[in-house]
Image 1 (tube, helix red, strand yellow):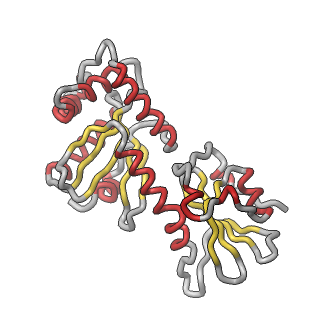
Image 2 (tube, rainbow, N blue to C red):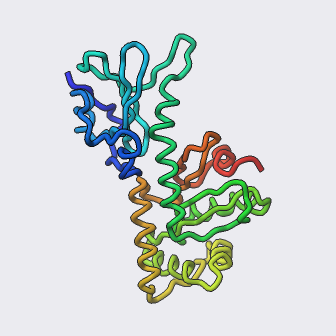
Image 3 (cartoon, helix red, strand yellow):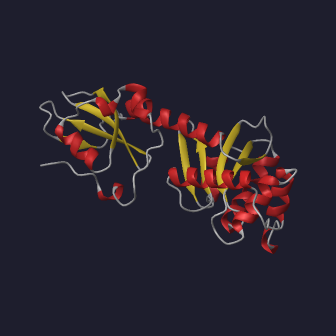
Amino acid sequence: MQPTLPQKYLRRSLYVVLTGLAGLAFNASAREWPAPVKALEAQGLEIVGSFDAPGGLTGYAGILQQQPIAVYVTSDGKQAIIGSMVDAKGADLTREPMTRLVSKPMSVKTLKLLEQSAWIAEGAKTAPRVVYTFTDPNCPYCNKFWNDSQPWIKAGKVQVRHVIVGILGPTSPGKAAALLSAPDPQAALLLHEQQHRSGGIKPLAQVPATIRAQLEANKELMQQLGFSATPATLYKDAEGNLQTVMGAPSAEKLKQVLGPL
């Protein structure tokens, strides 16, 4: 019987952040995986490498919907088990290989893509923490996150980099373009957020071709990362792995995203 991925992993389309991740370790596409692993690949799981596991099992590191998925195959290569392995003391034996093979490389690659996008920084360059958030000028939840993050920004604890998109309404592209093309984008963003309830920045009637290309690239990056709404925020956890939050973070989640105040 072929293994089947849990339904929760099949509800959305797969996107693998690292298009070249397989080449980082095992050149997975060139390998001949056991039949159960191939069956999971057919369902959308991207296998990026393998690792030794206790009990005669072989572990396979995969990605589905930007989430690391571990698969363990029995010694005869005929059965597969999806999930985490623990020892007699309850220690997680899956975490280290999955972090090494999947989470760390994904984080590095995604951060590089974000760094190369068109963003407006808010906060000190010397801030110990950098957070990326996809922001639409017409998004009320983006404005809430902006307001909620101000104590951290003013205290020099975090720099928030707003990856500007224009996707929510007819005036979004024009407003997004006005922010990116402003002589002082940081000042323009500040004024816009302060005046958000009254409409914020005036949209450009004509979006310059260079700005249009930046907005399109930001939109594509947002979609590639699996986000369909704003704000979509990315931050590093205590272990250096990239985590995401959709929507305006709750008060408790805000502390995780922005760090201690």
